[in-house]
Picture 1 (cartoon, one colour):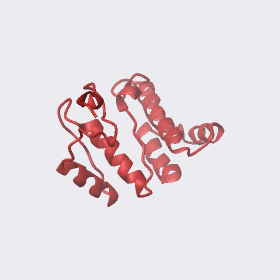
Picture 2: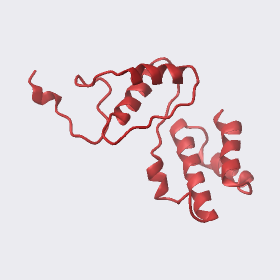
Picture 3: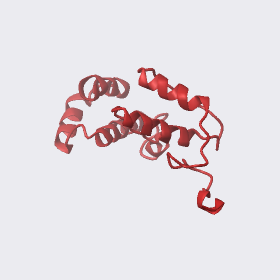
Picture 4: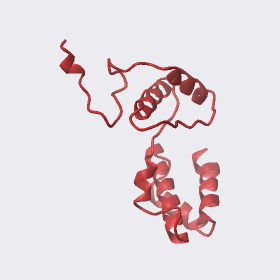
Length: 137
């Protein structure tokens, strides 16, 4: 197979089993920490393999029966800015909540709306915490 078959444009994750991916200590460390229930951050400069690390780690976690999702918080910022007024904050939190519902197939749309209606009086951060406690977990 020629090298041209391994070409990949910069700016995005490599497919999980891409032959040019070089496994790093971070691959093992992140997988083991998440498998053990630890909360993890992945911080690094642009174009340093964060997305590829995420996709490979998610694939490994799914293979052992974990439930995973990925949400681009930047996409949520287009819906509402968490650093602006109360309405923008609530819109951002509700967008995040809806992504979780959709990605984990937790509730149908009527159940989601009912849960939100019953909890909308709460501040956004408490609303999300309650959602984690009552629905997600």
